[in-house]
Image 1 (cartoon, rainbow, N blue to C red):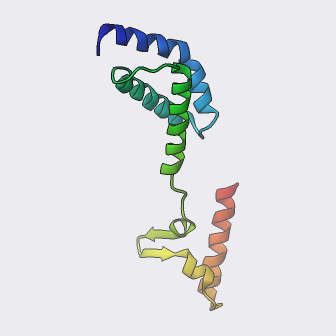
Image 2 (cartoon, one colour):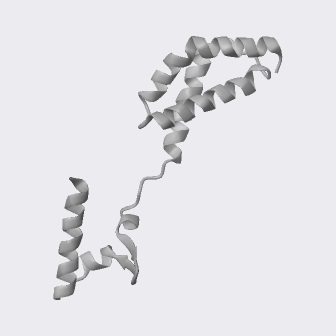
Image 3 (cartoon, rainbow, N blue to C red):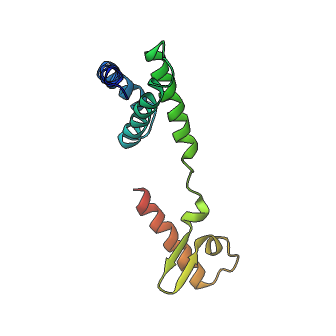
Length: 125
């Protein structure tokens, strides 16, 4: 990267950095993700600036940021309830789904069902 390119990139970062970070931060769940996306935008700018001229830098930056935000949401996989209902104990794996759906009303399954719901209530408080 040539010295004028570095100077131009530094100028772009100082000119658009705060505004671009604010744009990203409003659209993602946490600051760490926003910082990662902003870093990806700056990286793409450095990779692109020598390869092709960018006529509207502001538009280009916000478009790349928007695309990175979309990519970030696509990468995030929601937690499956099935995964949350399985617990590994010293005695082996316990699948709460089987306990909750069990039609037998014996004292053990009733106790485990109640224990599950009490634990869930505490976790949600």
